Length: 199
Image (cartoon, rainbow, N blue to C red; front, top):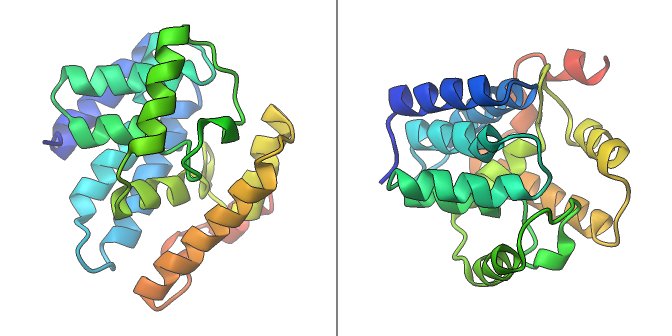
């Protein structure tokens, strides 16, 4: 069961009050991108996509962290009975289903690491997981952007890792996958993407 939009919005506002930062604005743009793409895709619900995009980083409510925000978000959503949102709190960071492809620091306990490793390896991804993975790479806190702009933004903050190029290739594959469903460029649905990418 997923929360409705009003409940998800309230959860994000409360979470951002606990740990203010640009992640809130980023989450809102991810949600808007998810909604815009899902509205044009068969068998995807725009409201569901919006909610899942909005909550993907909700684990940041627990404070500044690296990969710990993934498990914190999972626990937050499971605590509310939001199982799909909980999965996406982890899956959005692993477009490649291998925990070794992480670009962050595992600031978690050994038990949490083992849980996440098993979870990622065995999760059944659907188009909502894939959509949030894509839209996470289309949104800066300042607005929508070209994928390549976000790639550089993340690389400057986290550095280049052995899996970086494979992650980029997978994200570009997701772009192609959804554009096949849309029949148009994803960028056609994201207002201000060109202007924001040139900043």
